[in-house]
Image (cartoon, rainbow, N blue to C red; front, side):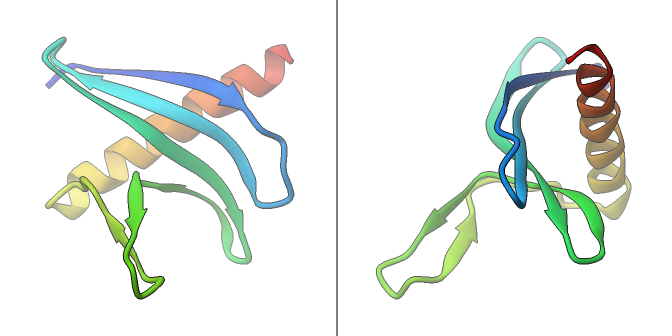
Length: 86
């Protein structure tokens, strides 16, 4: 599966660092992926929506751990490349 990752904006906030998008096989696009600096290190958060009760639910997400790990690695790799340039 071909994955094209783009860092769409650098935020530079305290915990939110950037937004990314990922395109699969030039056919399916996910926007609104977030790069987060958490207490256990940097990680990737999938797009989510807040319910009326105030709880957040992911809109889309990888089903397998392998795909989740690959997406996170690719997004963080692109983020690190972008930060070297900035």
